[in-house]
Image (cartoon, rainbow, N blue to C red; front, side, top):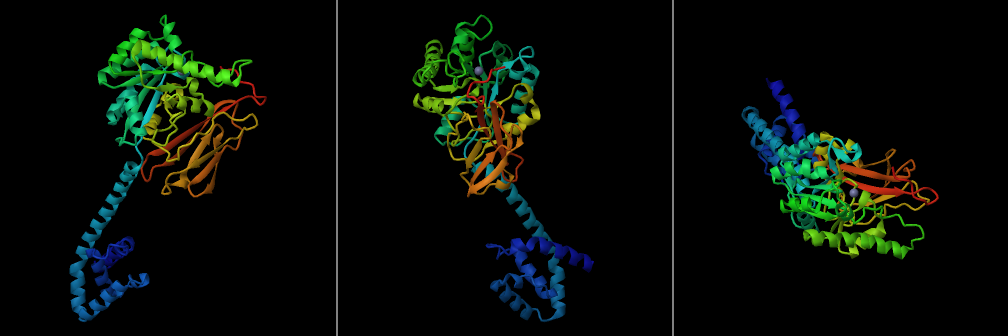
Length: 439
Ligand SMILES: [Zn+2]
């Protein structure tokens, strides 16, 4: 019994001593019991830590407990109390760790996640479609997980004004105004009373004929809480200049794509919010600056969570069509937080001679698990290099392919199972500077 006591006590002492010797723990009852044990059995905890208070206390106790019988009696009465207090201290430590993990998420900046769908149909091209059954499962997962589905304007407004945003805020968006949004998604969303957004290329609506939603259908969904938003007028590849087109003419054309769509949305549906989704998620810094000058907030198709430091001229959304509609990965995506980076534009359009782009990341915090920062490029993990305090670069070991590609960077959020997530788009032209054909 005594041996068992000694083994147990030694284990508890070993496990607990660090916490008892930390600042602010001097009045912990277990600390005094430790001292008693130390005096009784000649252990040396305390001396090695050079703690004056401990040494004086130990001296005092050894003077008081000169009688060996008193010491043993006292110790044997005290050890169950030591077990109880140690157990309580352990529980407090575990609770503190859990609280810290929650606090880590809570102390993060406000954030949200934006989901991007196209068709909700099993007969349309797989790459841009989600099967209606799978879409139903997505919505059920949102409901089960206690996610708050917000209108897009509400989340953007809160983030821009640095207002508090509860954890688990999600925005649902659809690009291109396909009829399946009305037939398959709208009834489900309406039944749940959830807002959603449709990014509309207005020329498609003008020429509807059943291939796209009509103004009437958009109006009906708008009346039920949907936001109808700018996706340019003719849905072009905005970066591509026409042959013989000057830089100024190109810029005017891009501007007209945005303003024409906005005028039509205003005229038919009374839309005044200046939100825009880039066709194919394509933009460069020139377009981003133009969009800012026009007073728009714009969305891309690169993945990641949004926060106040995100690039409001290219906000991320998680594409959830085709291979990206898996339920397990949806759960991970829904729980992401924006990687705490300083706000900056990184030009996705690569210079002709750049095939292995460098992504520079400047973090706003230094209490992160930097050793677990990983960025995946099209050919696998990139090489991460530390530039200085809180500054890192990611660079692919192999050339990124011609076309659109991304670096997806993640890092665990404290001790939780959640991830910070940031994605950078790259657009690489042919080596001679010409544009690649679209599939
Ligand atoms: Zn589109």
